Image (cartoon, rainbow, N blue to C red):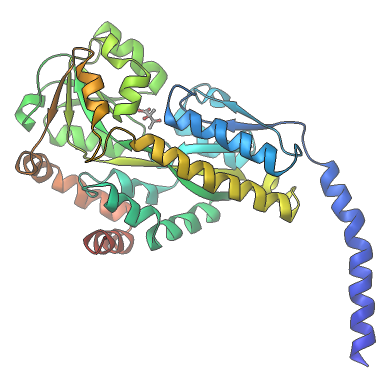
Length: 342
Ligand code: X2X
């Protein structure tokens, strides 16, 4: 008795689902807007370009993505990007964990000073349980996360003098990024931090309004930061920011299941390629990017573990304070996974 009823219901569902599907398809927009901070002179922007290309191929042109670098959809204000994605001002984004930290406090994890000593530590987080946990948090915030990418380990540069010890930073003015955690870190080191967007950082460096900044070496090179008077670069690897590929929830739900999976697969592939690009020349076996920076007349200082230890000691209170904001459970899990890394 149940069987025919079930068959009938299934048939009805099938009949209904075809027009519903067609209707959903009709709602596809001619173009979807992808926000990034950096453009195609950087691994980040190359990752965006690649994602768009792969999506176009995999959806046979049904989904067309146009990239808007410079966070131009929010007038360059990186810290407003996440809210804009949630609200639908932005359809897709590849965003830095730092820039989204003001809205998603758990993402401050990656900015805890000296948490991740090497790439394997970073991978243990993004590719492990912690990464899954963070994706759940992003989902809860109303945004669909698909894949990880990478901006990179953030190294400190300045126009004044070589930095080998915290004392060398004393009184120096630094441009720092969007999360207030960075103000605390630089203050703990005796420096003078000012938060501003990447767009504002460049004229501030050029005019000498600030003495230094911190960014991955690929960003230093791509933005030609040496031409803004930055003569000293210290490799201290105090934090790294992963990138996250996401889609606005409504946009995601307007796509067919098959297209959703195509966009996800494209993000995973573009993310993998982008991470490889972000690490190129910055590994134990190939450190050519540091040489490239030296070739521009910049003094590159690579700290020994003992020298790094001095910075780590002074920033420990910042770590402890912000671990509470991130969530002690998540930080403990991250520490354990890093300790057990392969
Ligand atoms: O603003 C920065 O320094 C940058 C480009 O690295 C980020 O968006 C986090």
